Length: 132
Image (tube, rainbow, N blue to C red; front, side, top):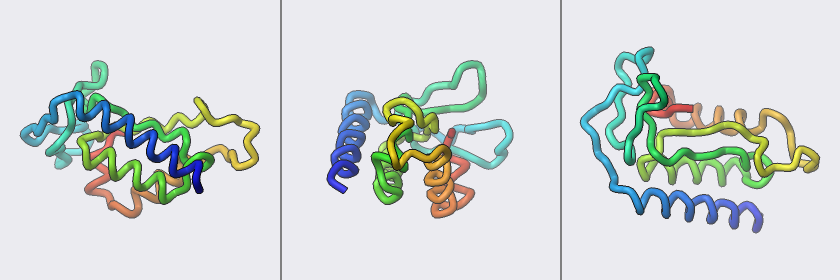
């Protein structure tokens, strides 16, 4: 539990640093994806267009690679809530960066399962505000 808390704190600190050093941008509703006709974003921190797509993403992206090994589902939910509350709508699900594949707790797909549980909790309307 202590390792999870310290990782959660480090992630929160990183997001706080990034988000506090960039102006918060409250846009007029901006369409996130052409495929979601009614989906709008009302508060994305320092929005950017993702490549040549029509997706609008926050400058900060929440990495989920620690979900399931270094962070419990409740820690993960708190991190996502914190990121969203501070204008982050962009989530990266690649889970192999810092997590050793030999860790006894490692299980391929755990990150996606935790994110899926989070999405079930927030519902489809709020899910449409995220770029995953």
